[in-house]
Length: 110
Image: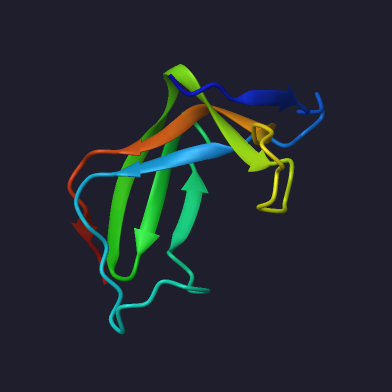
């Protein structure tokens, strides 16, 4: 069994993080996604939990869904590798409570 020492350090006014879930695969033309714009994400004005993602010439509709179990984003508290036999400690920097779920097939637009 692995035991982790966690320090909860999430301020109440911290911006909310959200996870995106896409069905299928995304492929870059040159094969690299680093420092590239994925697409344009917009929120529906009428339906608060509806979103639209435009990637290239494709558009996919999605919705905001609450996660069954929140996901904690951890950061290592002790940076050095030499811990002198101590257990590594981590800090919870954010908690993800919702995700954007894009499960429909993309529509092609020109």
